[in-house]
Length: 238
Image 1 (cartoon, rainbow, N blue to C red):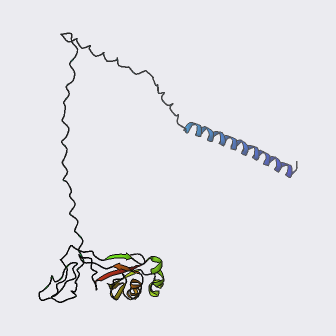
Image 2: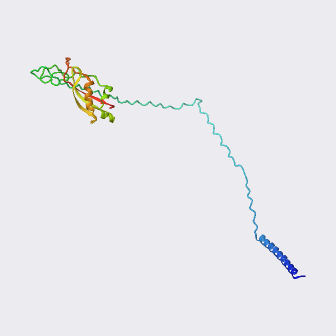
Image 3: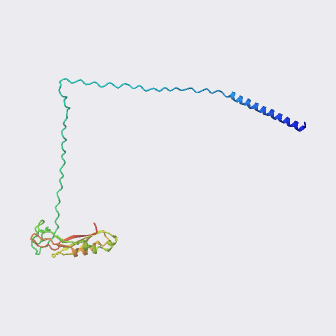
């Protein structure tokens, strides 16, 4: 037997012994783990019992009312009659009386002077100062009456250029003397609103050109001369 064969056998024996030792070690380890684990007690069993609820008995029916003695029908319910409310008297609203228009003040002039003073400032009479005119105070005769005014078509061409450029509306008031032929003369500017646009000058051109008035007359029908009337001209919307 050679030395190599002997050595191989020794290695084989050593391998077998090592394998047996390893197997025994694994077995001992498995036994130790199995013995070390404590036993777990089983969970208790919970029993559930189902039952139906107890239903209470229904309440007894209400007692039947005993019939009333007498046998008649029950009395009707009482009815209280409330009187209707009294109407409230509303105060009567009375409109204030309308103020009578004031007559224009006319100062006439008598054609012939007299020795005694006349009626002075008669409402529509032609006598004034020391004359013996036929004026008999206010309330007689006829006042001045407008016969014609200016239309928008007649006013539009005479609108002041400054007001036309600024699109400004306004008015002008003019005082004139009524002639016997219903035309106006001796006109003068009274006011213009607003100022600075030329409404006054335009009104001075429009009024004597287009307006016509019947002059006032006395109680005897005589025309009152020199009577002034104030006329205003509106340019655009007021």
